[in-house]
Image 1 (tube, rainbow, N blue to C red):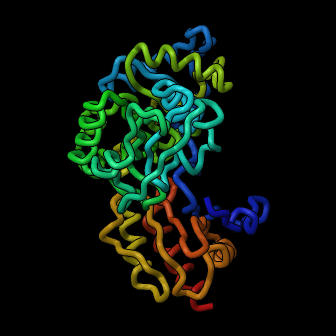
Image 2: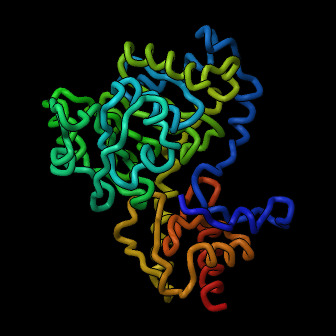
Length: 360
């Protein structure tokens, strides 16, 4: 991700009041209910599968997604990389969208840990169709690396929180399966997609062989992600989790918050989406900002600020001075992410700060 100056410019120690933090939905704080649940959590050694709270979380996640089993992992990156390891062999390729998280923001771990390389393709709005995938597929060949897995991302972070339409997703999965290959879904924000579409998350993701989703973004938990799939895959996944250093012990104190996030978090996403649309409509009215509010589907918006005469870093620096945090994701692109810790009133305040920053 393009480095912003926002964090450097506005240290916690210098803030006189809480900032309006629109950098990411990863900045959400656990609710009082989560903190109580964490304090009271029944725990055990999860490496021995003896933590009852983690066991409940994994069982519930599997139920919600209609899967045989689930695995609690510290991060979405770890969940994605375990899935890639499960589906591939050394020397293969992973088909993914050019701006995809598995390719850009996971420290090249698919190469380091699984011995595979990405085969990227750029797609409009980050939505990979079967046409995109088919053009990159490689089966038996003595000249080129074979495809090991197709990795999709829904919603797509760096395409602006865009949703893969269910019919497109299902076609990619069905046609990929016809070739004998698996599909992994990086569903870090898949609940955002399900809520926006009004579709049950199990139905939306049913065709994927494995799904990773985050508890620690819009759902509001402080830590953790889940990987769901068959019992056999998740059993092997525990081995790879341990290899990556993710074998946690009395981690039920984290799972307790995750259970609340899983049960209560999705219904809160509707307001996040509405706030993002409100923010996008306000930005579209400001001189120098280029964004189409009609394309803002969930809680992420990315706009071109080149018309302001500033880089995204310069603008984020000005915003930080006005107690608004946002990250650049390119020299001319800035990203705003709404979440449960940002109200409609704060979005309005942020728009005022942005307008003032452009005038100054």
